[in-house]
Image (cartoon, rainbow, N blue to C red):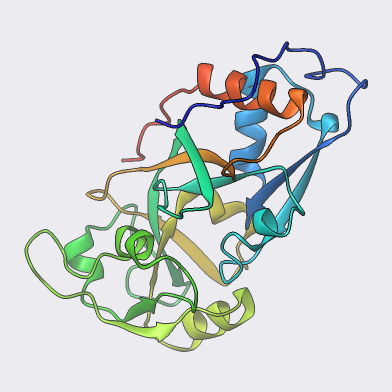
Length: 225
């Protein structure tokens, strides 16, 4: 667990207008971040949600375009501090609507391994990608990571023109093309989500207060079945 080393903040600034908006880095859709914010009792109006692509990884933090960001699986980067889980995101595979698995209520990772999957984007932490797209199933079947993940548009094109699938998360469902379906994976554990910030950064008091409130209000989001 990573602890904030700055002086203990008050909660002033959470849910008020006396502090600058917190720049909150997100990926794909805002639903997870909005849930974290809601559990702290803060107002969404006190935040600026800043989306990023999967290829950017921690660029926004490192260039100080965001104060804090939401991450999965506690990535290990020397210059990035990651707190304890503040929630969880259930797993899913993304497939085109014509895919053989598209009509299923759930699939197993063993079934998903029958189809080509995606390799990690350039610069994305390898250890985290291995948790998102496992190299092998629990039974030892290799997962064929043959397509390189680049942009959302390229992902949609590949999923709708081939029988490839992408190991992903339930939270992205709201932002998908109508030609893509998210099918829950029944036997992959939900991904822990956490807040991350620049290691050693002197964060404003209201940002520190938000991080502490989010960590104190962490709840379990059960995996879909």
